[in-house]
Length: 160
Image (cartoon, rainbow, N blue to C red; front, side, top):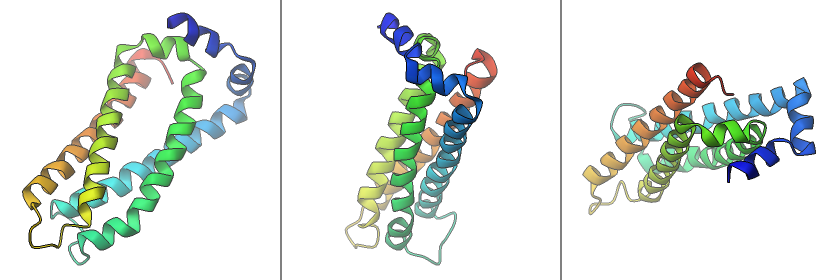
């Protein structure tokens, strides 16, 4: 598998992106900007479910307003993240912190999906609010973990 990622790293389109400053910077800016939108909007809904913020608006209303932004930002963050990955694929693949980050992001996405699916049920009398709050708390923790892992990759590993 390592050989495949090393080969990917040296593909012509990847070397063009990584070797052209403005192209790589455009991908990087897109990645970070969409992550801010993704995590920010998911956290707002999580905090609303936990009763910390936006109390004047119902959970279903807030989720309906913000989750289209979550999914759009997620798609763009994944696309730009994949492009960034390819520019150092061999190094990233071998990096344990990168693998942890990807695992934490997967868990964050899973819990964000759980929160989204249950947000519409929040106002119903039979709603299990304790479980919804637990899912929102887990989503919040995993998104924070993903951010910290990303910072760790940049600071310690010297990658991306």
